[in-house]
Length: 388
Image (cartoon, rainbow, N blue to C red; front, top):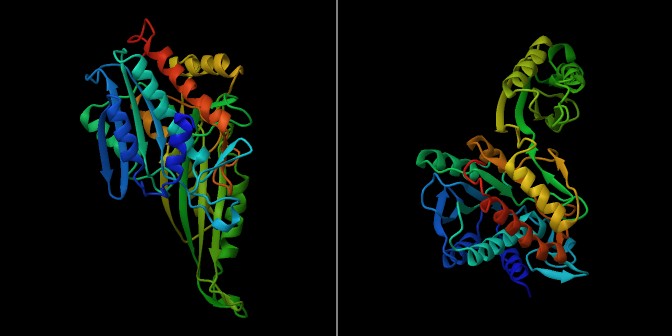
């Protein structure tokens, strides 16, 4: 069994459902410490984070960091899986198990690539690092990379280039890289009405009826036109709830969960203001609590990291990758505001969060070479300092 496959299997066996770490970060930390990395374990609340650095001690050194998470979503009913979700199983050329693609396979590949790189180049230029968390799949991400970045700002830590190992490929390894992500703005909306008997609507105020015209306007609104790098901003209602459970009662309130996936053509504060203006225009009595989980970011064309990853995909995968800003969010949204270039490249994402999640063994065994090539090409540049 190869080094990357062996490590991926070891990680899958550990039930690290958010925010549990299940010993994954200690295992990885001990391995990297043996390889000469300086290890810092950062625990906030129930969340474990790992920061491992190799190379120059001065934070003024150009730094390439790999970013990932070892937490996974719940497996769902285990009997629905062809093999136990936390028992890695290889069949038909694929490694099955929860987290195989998202993203314990990618984490294993990053660790092996870093071990190989520093073994071959122990006196490499610049700094190489790995940042891992057990709080990426959770609903708030308060104590994961978001909190680590606050620590970095306080201590003067820096990241110049960040490679996120999230599963990005569509059909074959290297066919798509993510060079940015949309922002995510969520809201919890409560529309107040007056509860009453359905036979006496004149004595009640139905919040469902009151909200319906406003919802129609919100759904039809053109928030922006997008731009060359991003599609237009989208608005969605993910949950709508009202009622007491009785068929003869007009409910007293309605609760809706709304979300904007927004591009750089819009600002979060403008989306909030426009939404509330529409709600007020319809005369609603409402309360609306907002949560901004991340702003949009983009690694611009011509950026050193972006071009390096494109070149590596061409040379090692034989493919010219699609450069996308689609998909959901990733922890890269917390690193980009540090001034870092961020690019995501990882295995095929077809089975992530699904029953019988899997990754092709061939892809998994090719991935360390891709990550190692990125290290070599970035840190061996003649203009290393100027490229930051």
